Image 1 (cartoon, one colour):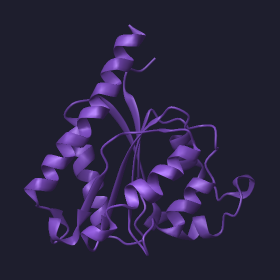
Image 2 (image 1 turned 30 degrees about the horizontal axis):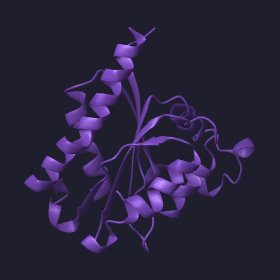
Image 3 (image 1 turned 60 degrees about the horizontal axis):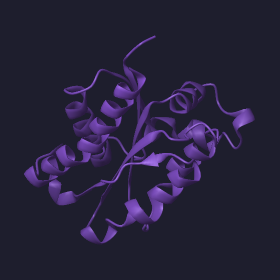
Length: 184
């Protein structure tokens, strides 16, 4: 049995390069310094055509199956999306429509979003948390939201945002410390 944590990172952006992907990458980079991780990336931009042609789980594209299996077996999920019209992207939602609704019970999820301005920051609590509540996942208390100003040429450069990432990782570390202590 591996003691590595199976992390699945879902980047809901429809573009490449993507500020959402950069934000999620910064989180993963810092988390890798603290936990032993097996990382699986789901990039919605790369799966757009497969998602559009997969209306039900029974008929999903073979390209999607490894991603769905990875998320259904994840120990930890980091999920982020850019904000479009006050919500996550449609293909991000469609991806989760194909996930087994019982597979994420109790799985910790760190939520993130990017947007053009601060007024969209509530997307985390008003859109993303309810989505993962449906799955009975354990959404962690701190979400990460970054505006365009936090980035320079698709690099996260805002020191305040980097501090927020550190704060958001504390519940993740506590969750797995408690989990490891309970298993011992």
